[in-house]
Length: 128
Length: 128
DNA sequence: TTTAAAACCAATTGACGGTCGGTTTTCGTA
DNA sequence: TACGAAAACCGACCGTCAATTGGTTTTAAA
Image (cartoon, rainbow over all chains, first blue to last red; front, side, top):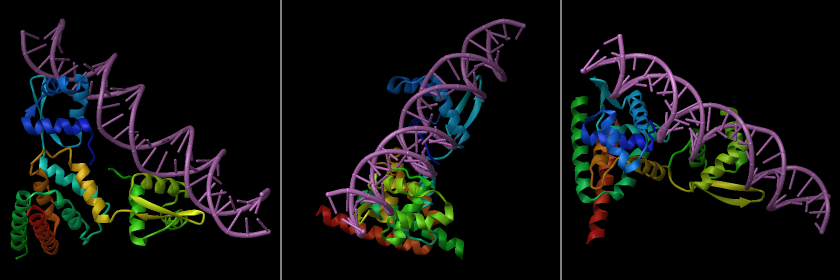
């Protein structure tokens, strides 16, 4: 899973705005980065074919919306990009997490810890 | 920061074997995936130019070795690949962590928690 | 049924990794 | 010091993929 610059921008836009057709996307990006309508057309199409967007026809145009939440996609990408490095039962990924946590502030650390605790509870239930 | 397949393989080899020249790398990979010596030559060179390897001349040949630990590189890659998604003061990355922690077993969760605690201590010291 | 809007297709460009042949540099040795 | 082998380095080509855009086909509304 690897995304181009524009694909990320478009995803970002859809996460913020929920749903949009090509015209809306184009209207938004036209001023700030140029490009033709077709550029956004095919970018949306590419994202759709990658399974990252869903779409529904409404009148002439498709209404696109993100199919996955931002954090889900991030997790997915992290997984795909690290899988080649990590042997199973390896703690490299855990170590990598901690290597990144240098950049986290206390608030974020708290959040992360809470989430871990939550996960731990789920694990216990599942294994009982 | 994005690495090709062969680059990852070579890094993997160097993490395991510590130090090697092109000849050794070639000798190792020749049987299992083919390619000419030059292929490995330029792969090592590419990795070196990316700052991921260090090298020291010894006789004719360079002795290459990984410049970063595996977990450091993983952290680096995660950071680079997620930075475009994460807004400032956003907890998406934290959320992504938790989205991935589904794949962690209890042991790994423990390890992660311990590392977070460690990080928290460092933060406290730094801010005092 | 016409026709404008939008989707779809095809081609080009630019990065980048992988691959390898050929050239230059380097170093040990005669 | 000069020679020859060994290794580094350079340049070219291929394949993949995102970005971009012009042209063609489909589609839906009047």
